[in-house]
Amino acid sequence: MAYPKNYRYTKEHEWISVEGGLATIGITDYAQHELGDVVFVELPKPGTKIEIGKSFGTVESVKAVSEIYAPAAGEVIEANNELQNTPEKINTDPHGAAGLNRVRVTNAAELSGLMDAAAYEAYIAAKGKEASA
Amino acid sequence: MESAATPHKSELRKTPLNALHRRLGAKMVNFGGWDMPVEYPSSGGLIAEHKAVRAGVGVFDVSHMGDIGIRGGGKPGGALAAVEHISMNDASKLAIGQAHYSAMLYPEGTFVDDVIVHRLGEDDFLLVINAGTREKDINWVRENTKGFDCAVEDLSDAYTQLAIQGPRAVDLLRKLTDAELNGIKNYRFTHGTVCGLKNTLIARTGYTGEDGFEIYVPSSVATSEKVWNQVMEAGREFAIVPCGLGCRNTLRLESKMALYGHEISDKINVWEAGLDRYCKMEKGDFVGRAALEQAKAAGLRRTLVGIEMLDRGIARDEYCCSNEAGEAIGVVTSGSPSPTLGKNIALAYVPPSFSAVGTILYVEIRGQKCKAQVVPTPFYKRPKKTVTQQVS
Image 1: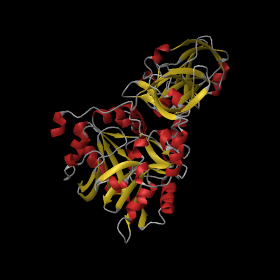
Image 2: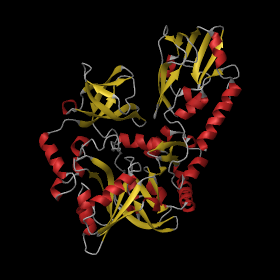
Image 3: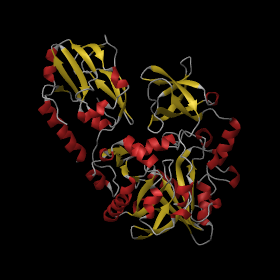
Image 4: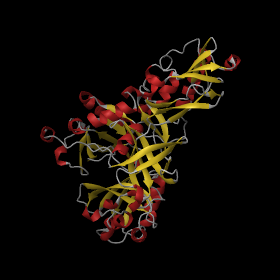
């Protein structure tokens, strides 16, 4: 699956897409693949302040619980509550419909520390090599 | 996000099918020191694998399991006496060609490991043990059978063990063997030619709660891959998929089969684990018996129950159970979404006063008290065979 060029990526496999101070956050295709069948999501309520690098929710597969870490600081405007009934969308459309929540970003400059699509793809390719070594 | 199933590196032990799993694109995990497939994205993943076993057939590489042979010495009955001493079930009741579930116990009445005991001959037994406890088990068996006239042999690396599981397993295996499978009832076994390999052990056993077989073939990579590929080929018409340890766990949990380190361990005794029916106190002395007698007299302090989540949330291993007031009462030993039932289920140790079906208790999930209810177990029981399946 292609990694959108206009998104930014974290080492913990979240993506963030910002338009006009509003950001959408999700987990990457690599992350959903590592997790396997997603069966449960827990997201913060609108109004929740999230802090960069801190966990703000969880995504669970049959096997594992994964924390989601905020790629940037901000305030949650809207949580994607549809995912509570259709968590499998995280597997089928991780970069699109399965954005976890919308966030008003406090400091857009924080995003400059994140990877672009090319850097992220190189990062996961290196991880893949490590795993099969 | 951080995944618990993070890939890892070398120095792990590998089964003869390791390279094949990697070629199939399996997700590999460290399971008790073994590099094992947890799921195969090419099969559709864990849930698809789970459902294939319940509805059709799946194949598992379970070569990481250990195998201990106990054979009689000069005088007849030496091996039987040794097995009776180290295993809580009554091996004297086994016919040749029969197997049963049992456990090896510490003098405290707690678990060294659980085990399937196969009676190969009058005084010849095969014990199949867990992967993560292989060395501990073999040492313990050697130590505790010293006084008996028998030979103990670690056969773990001699076999590749495949579990072919599901309602169509019998139809699949029939295509690959000359053995009369209808004659092999549950927990019985025979030796026959499988994939051209003479004298292969074929046992109607498994760890899925479904009908199925486990076959034991020579552990060379070439032979192991050849058999795996023939099983896949024969299973194509039944939509067979390779299955990983992920669904092996959800399948056994739905069927309430114990997993070492979870429901049973060196801290938990037989009565607590609810495995009374496999423990034959009347058969005579065995390691752990005296402690179990005392434990029985003292009464249960905790017992294993099945629970189902009523609130949103998945109970996971080691999560705390509490009462209405929020006081800790117990702990979850295994918990997962159940692909068959579509519910979140778990096994937990709680005081007997919380063990009645219908009892409400709470599981602490990331600081939240989530409501759950004690339900009957096993969570899933396979449907009785239809008449047509019996004659087929």
